[in-house]
Every structure is written in structure tokens, then in C-alpha cells.
Amino acid sequence: MAEDDYGAFVDWTLMGDLAKSSGPTKVDCKELKEFKQMARQGYWAKNHKLRAQVYQQLIRSIPCRTVTPDAEVYRDVVGEAGAKKPNANIPLPEFVDGNPVPRYCLKADAVASAHRIINCVAGQFPDISHCPALPAVTSLLLHFSKDEAQCFEHVSRILACNEPGKRLLDQTFLAYESGCMTFGDLANKYCTAAHKLIVATAQDVLEVYADWQRWVLGDLPFSHMVRVLDVYLVEGYKVLYRVAIALLKFYRKHKMGGQNQQQSDSGKIRSDIQAFVRGIGSTVTPEKLLEKSFSIRLISRKEITLLQLANEKSLQQKGITVKQKRRNVQLALNPETFSSEIVSAKEMHDIWSWIPERFALCQPELLFTTATHGCSLNRFYSHCEGHEPTLLLIRTTDGDVCGAFLSSDWEERKRGGNKLSFFGTGECFVFRLKPEMERYEWVVIRHPELASAIKPEGPEGSASSEGQNADGGLQQPDKPPGELSPFLAARHFNLNSKNTSMFMAGNFDSIIVGGGGDSNALYIDAELNHGHTGRCTTFDNPPLCKESFQVAVLESWGFLDAMAQ
Image 1 (cartoon, rainbow, N blue to C red):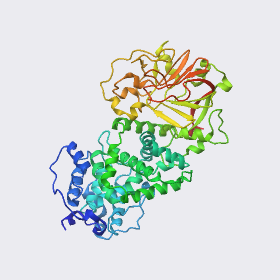
Image 2: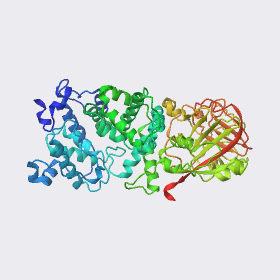
Image 3: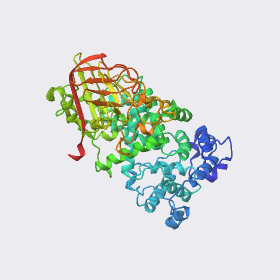
Image 4: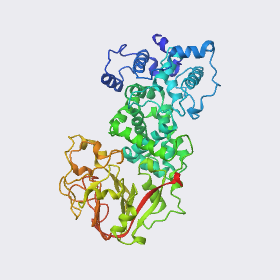
């Protein structure tokens, strides 16, 4: 058959419809933008030989290190052994973390060829310390290679990519773990319903999300995976995030009919998701998967990169640079030692599932409570300054519970002088726990079109002392680059209105969370006794409790680095 040149390792009886070549036989395209459109549309998806040729063209165009091993290097290294039948019993390098080579549609003995290629890669790339996706990527590329040497060259070029800002494969535990944390952040923000399901059913959410990359590179059926590979080779790592979030959305839809929503062992949830992804072909076509993946309105590549860097920096600060057992959220929230006048350990655990992943290894530290420190705004500030981020919890005299996650140090309020000026980042959010549990994030996350206009000129205006905000009233104090949270800092966005970035503010007579429009998400007076809540533009939230309320207890919690203890 015509595919013999690129199908020496393929068991065609396993290929199904992909064994029947049809459609275009050539691609006249050199511009990346055109490749992107053609990849998403599946232009070469029905022709095995054309797909192999396109892959070769795309991989050869990857900017690489000056010295990148090629096919000739492989032949020299393997030597006469290359003519012999490879041995599948040769163990894979430790850096693949025990992940096997998925067979997909390979001949049974071709898996041994993948073993030989990966071991040769290990010898040529001694700096790789953690790359669990390598077996799957090698297996996939072997389907479209003339021989082992060509597959080795393609894998090597992907690993040696040095294009600024482009990420193809994680090669260290630090990069891999920060990727897991970043996926958790993205799932939390853009896959809210599915995230709630995982929080409700799994004992350790982080452990479940640690499998995200394997869902795509390992568990997906071959027919789905090659369509993902079409786009991945053009657009890079962000495609994996999109597809994994789409899989999580489909999983949640699949579970909606189920009756059992009780919390269980995380391993069972991981196995359940894996089984669903492996059998997804019965309900979701490859095209439907890609359609769902690219309909998700994620933040920009720049913001994702900033978030990855923030998570990586957080891991470095905690000394996590090599593989080690991860402390889970439940260990940080020990029910026997946790004590709050407002929330139970279970409720705090639920709140913890909303916070950015880089703080998930921290444990809650009570900084201030009106029950102990009295109803004084000055004492509130003195106990909270120097801590970033913080969690504000309020229980009203009516028994309602609400609060806010606040990304910046309250000391920032001083930069505005005597004015009640806003600061903080888009990681801030407000929530209510009772009578029902709901979170309200920065409106720009849910409606990215709000960040499409020309960036406003200099900051001006302020919030009124009664918590009412004049239209357009926002003063953003200057802060050296890098000190603000690198994720969702308003300075990265071209906002239609300054009202959409009024996160937190405070002065001598009040604290405010959320501004814009006719009200604030939360307004608390200087005695920490009376409060007001209403809809604000920044979070687009309904009132979090009765609009005018009396505070029964107010607490502020910090994030204590458990790894440093």
C-alpha cells in the first residue's frame, strides 16, 4: 500500500477507518497561520502518508539547539544492533516515571523499537530528569516514521526546541509539577462545574489533576490522539491544556446521570476518569473533542505562561525541584487542629479547592478574629499587614456566611495616600457558603471580551468612603514589576472599563472588596460591625447575603508554608 513508506511499524488491522487513505495528497503551505487552520480542520487527517509528511515538515521547522542529535547519530549509536530485533524487556529510563509505551496501533514488536529509541534519547539528553509523556509521544511518532532513526530524530527535535515561549514537553519534575498546578488553576477557573464534582467526590483534588497530561498522552484512543497531535505540533503545549479541560467537561456530563456523589478514595476517581477517557470514542468523536477544546475561552498564552512561571517559582521556594510525595489538602487542614468560629474544616477544605494551586501546599493560619482581637479596623490591619494572600470570612447575625480571597497585602492601601484606592489582582474572588455555596470570580475571566479595548490612560478617581464607587473611579497604586501576582494582574489587560478591576480597597474607616457599578461586593465599616453587600461590576455577583447586615464574627486567614515548618 502507498503508506508502506511511513507505516512499517503499524498494525493496519487496528487502524480502523484510518487505514483507508482519502482526501488531499499534498499540502502547499508554508505559513504557520495556514497550518494552524488546516490542522484544526483536519486537512490531512484522512491520509496517513500526507500526515506523516506534514509531521516531518512541522518537526523540521522547530527551532532547536545548535547540536541536536539526528538520524545519523542514532544509527551510529545503535550500530549493528539496529539490524537486530529490539528487546522489549529492556527497561525504560527512570525519568518516564513508570509510564509504559502505549501500543496504540503499533505492531506488537514495534513497542520494543520504541523502548530502544527512548533509551537512546536518554543517552543523548542527560539533562532530562522527568519526562513521563515521552513514551506516548515516541509511540505516536513511530506510527508515522520510515524507521527508528527518523523517529529518534523527530523526538530529539521536540525535546531540543529552544524557541522562546514555546513549550512542547516537560523535561524536569519542576516543569511537570508546575504544569499540573497550572492545569488545576485553569480547571478551577474555566471548568467550574466539573471542578465542583471532583472536589465533592475525590479526597485529594490535586492527586486527581496530576493525571491530566496522561489523559491526553496515553489514555485517549489513537483516532482522537492523532487529531490532537495534528494541532499540538503546530500550536504547542497549550493544546494539551485545552484538550484535558474538554475531557474534564465531558467526564462531568457523563457523571451527571449518576446517583453516587459521595466522596471516595482519589485512586477510584482517577481510575474512573481514565476508564472514561479510554472509552470516549463511543460517545465523542475526535472532531467533537477538538471543537469543545477550542470553544473554551481560555486566557492568553502570555497569561498561561505567567501562571506556569508563578507556580514554578512557588515550588522552587518550597524546595520542590525533584520528585517527592506531595502533601495533599487534607493534611494541611487537619480537622483535629483546625478551629474557626465561622467555618468547619470541611467548609474550609471546599474554599481551599478554589484558591490558586501555588498556595495549595500552605495551611491556614488565623491572623485576626473579632472574637479575640475585638472590633477594630486598625487591629485588623496590624494583624494582616505583611501577609499575602489572605482569606476574609464573615458570619452575619442572621447566620449567613460569605467572604473573599484577597491576593494582595493590605499594606498596599497606604500607597494611595488618604484616598480609598483599589489594588489587588484578578485572582481575587468573593463567595458565599450559607445558605448556599457559590464563588464569583473576576468578570474578565468569564467574559474575556471585556479586555479587548484600548488600555485606559493614567489611573484616576477613587471609591467613596461609603463604599459607593463613582463611575470609572479606580486608582491603581504603582508597584514594581514582579511584586504583583504575575497571574491576572490588571496591567496585563486592555480593559474596556476601569470598573472591571476594582478588587480590594481600605482606609481608616472602611474596607471594600469589589467595586464598580452602584455597589460593592463587600463593604465593612471601621467598627467591623456593620456591612453592606450588592452587585459590583468587578465580580458581577449578586448580594452575598442580606444587603445590609450585622457582623457576628469576622476572621482573616493567612497562608502558612507547611513545607517550611
